[in-house]
Length: 128
Length: 362
Image (cartoon, rainbow over all chains, first blue to last red; front, side, top):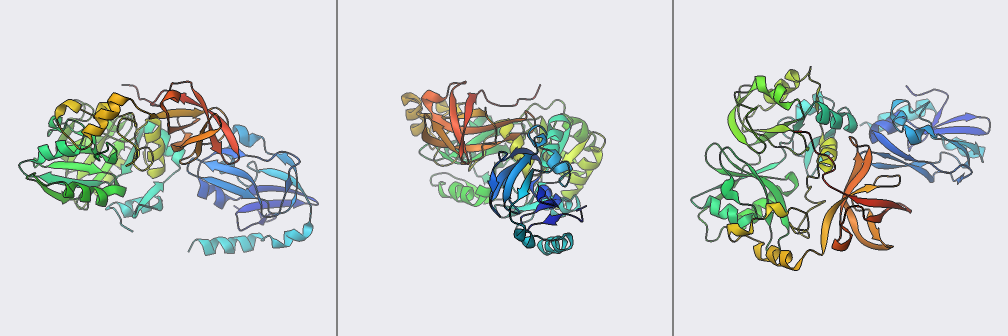
């Protein structure tokens, strides 16, 4: 279900790291909590994201959820497909439903992220 | 938290349970959009047992109901239910409700779950001069709604009530899945359908039988999430959002509910004055022109000035548009009028549109 080579946050974002570049999305747990996604507010390319600050909004029928930057960096790409078909965020949250790509500014921040096994433990704790 | 008699049924169906005004209720099972569309296209099954039932008996029960409500309750009988309201002397809402005359010839007010205690107090406290007795029977009743174009087809084999000849707002008594029930052609979805009231301790039998019977027709259990989006498309009022004790019946656009000629009732004078003087504001339907979803309490701007807030707003799963309701100054209520809604740091262009947003084919 959750890719092993991704890292995860307590806010239920995932991040896939390739060198200085990263792809960011929300986890399957997050999309299940939100329910049917109908609108995604994406940042502009070039936006400088700050660690742990909200950079976008995902709206489902029932709620509004912020998406937080798992690391600081500059947005290089946004998933335009989410504008026309926001439901892919529900259908394939870990791949086709990615939200943004960015250039990582400070690799030291990566230490705050959880590995898959840590995230799974974190999820277990939530389900009590 | 309080539980309806169908609580374990919801959990078996993997309903996502939430606290709804002290009741543990399913907000969704398979997803709001899927459930919403099932009701529009096939059928949906709702547990609405959390709704309240207040019984009024006594030789002056009808007179008393006439005094408490603006509609003409003389038209309520064993075969006919009525939509009405409990109004304050100011013509605003204590609640909106359905009035029934039960099988035992006793009146039943069906009220919102969130308001049961308040309504019971209100109804109990105005009885001076009336020979009536007021009882809160909310815990005795369960209520199951089946809504959607396939509702007749699914319910028919399970009941001895003649469904096809029933018109909207008509009522009949009989059995459903072998259980004694009152069946009315009413609902809160804008779709054809029925509400089944029973005092049985085992309403789960009705619930299970309807799910089983409706399987091939595509029935879905539906939670509170889709109940809200369905009612909003149909512009059915939600107490606490669109109507409350600060909004009058006329401002809410429910002029048809008020029968001035029937005689005195709480709020009659205030509403008559308001009718003569003209409304200063009115509830309108809107459609967002820009992107986003306008939700309850988002600010409404006209020419840069905040004039009100969104009362209800959602993404309409059927129309695929952002829709909602808000009170606007009367001079801005013409359809086509443009105004703005604040969504986070943006002001989004919005337009007054005709309501209801959705109406089913007859």
